[in-house]
Structure formats: structure tokens, C-alpha cells
Length: 367
Image 1: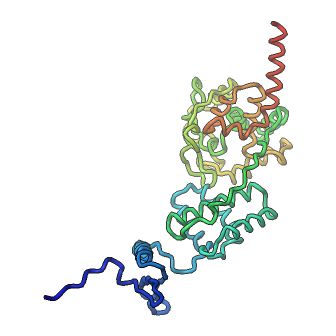
Image 2: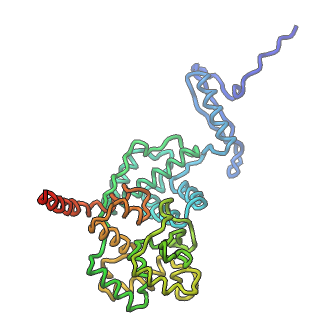
């Protein structure tokens, strides 16, 4: 009676025992179209079980299209990664990531093969950035590289992230630039003189982000309830989008003078509250800064200190200095939580402590 050989397990035919007693696993990857030669991946192990495990893992990667057999550089992966991100992220986010990648990551590490990228190389790159850019720019570059490499691990382009054990530089908080009451008065007077009085009055009263200001519609205004923030404009493309966070969708109670001015201007109006001069479309940061903000700032003598976020910071700072609750200010700004507001305006709080002490002194004196 003929005895059949036991059927070998999947992959066992690609593992051979060497004269040394070790086991060599070989995976055929097909024909290289450039050289017309068969491409193989091979590795030697101490045991047959280890060899089979490796072969099966590489076979799964090869069948799934995630096995990298060429010397992929960080620059190659950056190009592919940015294309993937473009489909998933907003134009502003993609523009920021691409700018950092092209200015910081590609020049310093783009030529390095991913499989040769070590923690030491990354640390040397970060050290060079210390002399080339600001601390927060260095932090931004480090965060982006870690994200890029994390995605490479998820897509099995590399086995591990060489930045896993490298700490991201801590953020250095900078004080938000705000105008004094006198400077704010000059800014509003200059805006009136140049025909932008209503826009700057609404802006100073509400502290809206530029994109939220550009996205206002006349239907958002209600003389009894205030101004509803329901949408924003992408400051790069000028297209409407949803507000930045859930708490960004808010209704702001306006100062009586602002309400009166809007009510007087709202008669028989619809569409954008502050359209561009040439159409009923929406502003972008570039156009608004050049055509409106810089001109007003120049007339006010504040061109060197003001930016499109200055009126937002001014509103928050003046309200906090006047003793308004930081929770109320946070809600007015549309921040995700009070912690975000504290990080930006912590420098205002010491003066408030002194003010509280003086108030308490008066209370105790009456006891």
C-alpha cells in the first residue's frame, strides 16, 4: 500500500533548511519590469517556526500592496502623504502642512531612506532647526514629522516610528497683541473715514475670527436677539464652511450702538453682510488685508502693530480688564473651553487679581 506524504502547511515550500541548521525563508515578488529579473525577498532564522511566521507576514503585506521593496525616502513618502491629506483636510490645513513640509522636512530629511531614518538623525535635524527658525516653528515641524511617520506606520510603509521616544518641544505661549482703548478709538475713527465704519464696529464689538466676519449674512442679524455665527469663510479660498468648533456656533448680544447701526443698514438687504467691492462674494485674508485692513491701520497709525486678529484680542483683553468673567469671554470668543482662553490671555489675569484685592479691601473696610 502506497503511503501519501503529509501535506505541507501554507508557506512551508518557501522555507529551506541550510547546512548550518538554520532556516531560510524566500518570498517571490514577481518580475521586475525594469530589469526583467525575478525579485525575491529572503531572510535567515534560527528556527523553522520563525521563518514561516516571517514569510506569512511578508506574503500578506505583498498581497495587500503594503510591502515596500524599494529604497523609499522620506521625500517620496511626503509627496504621497500630502496627496492623501489634501483629500481629507480643509484647504487651510493642507496649505499649512504643505508649507511646513516643504520648508522644514524635505530640505533637512527628504533625501533619507525611511528604513535608515533613526532617532539620532531626527534629533540632529531638530538641533539644526534651533539655529534656523523660531522655537514654535521648530515645534510645528517636529509635530508634523511625527504625524507623517505615524501614518507611515499605520500604512505599513515602515515598521516603527523613529520619533516615538523623542519629545515634541513644549509650546511657548506668546501674549496676544491687543490695542489700548486709545488705539482702538483711532482704529474705529480711521475705519469711519474710509467707509468701513460698520464693519469695524461689528468686529470690535464681537471679536469674530476673520473667517466668521467674512461669512456673516444679513439673515444672521436679529435686533432683539443679536448676531448669530452660523458659518465661516475659508480665508484661503473664500468658500463657505462650518465654524471652527461646535462652540463657535453662537449668538452674540451686541452693544446698543452696534444694534442700532446694523438695524439702520439692514433695511431690504440680503446676502453677505460685508461683500467684496466687486461682487457679492466673500473675502479672503489676502484680499481683505490688502484692500481694507492695511489701509485702515495705516490711517490710524497702527500698521506696525495691528493684524486681522488684533480686534479679536482687543475685545477679549478689554473685557477681562473690566472684570468680565473669563467664562463669558470664552463663550463670546467661541473657544472650545475656558482652558483655551486662559492659555491666550493669562497675562491679563495678574492685573485682575490686583483689582480684586482692591475691591476686597473696600468690602473689609466697611465691616
